[in-house]
Image 1 (cartoon, rainbow, N blue to C red):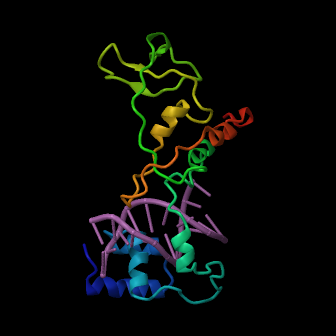
Image 2: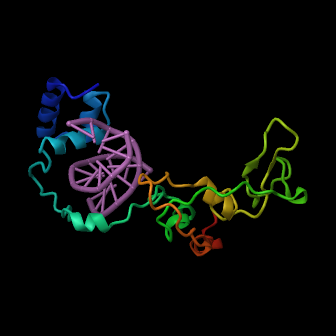
Image 3: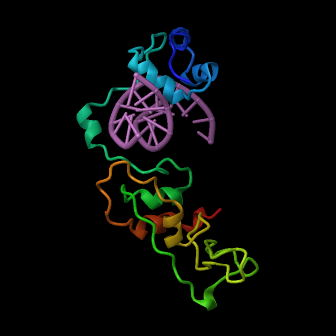
Length: 182
DNA sequence: CCCTGATTCGC
DNA sequence: GCGAATCAGG
């Protein structure tokens, strides 16, 4: 559905009445709160009055925004190990090749242990199916390599800026403090 | 964690 | 113009 005159009118009215963007989106239907906020801005309605000033939003300059790198997803993840995967890398990292696990190290669902990487390998319908089985990173179900693969940020929107250095292990290891084990 | 509005930019 | 993704805050 699109922004018909009626829907725009309702948006203007609800916005002026102080409803939040998500509340308005709920009443309009077929739109997200992001769509509502976007429309509010395009209509020039942003910056509602008034009772208690919205103090905290100093508008960031265009320059500041231009310099701010686009951070990958998971930056706000509640999992410190996931955040650690990206705290020293702001770039998309292409998935690694599948790793060949030596037969002796392979784990089945029966032989997995508490600290085994649970990255599945192969077709579960075949007897060759197994798990990576190497030591996993604390807080995550995967070893370091597979954690990077599992928590890929979304591919960059801009085609340039591809190959950048892979995140170092330091951040992960820093988050691997045994005291934090859940 | 929940939520809020703000902003960018591919579409 | 649209709005998802992501941000900075509360």
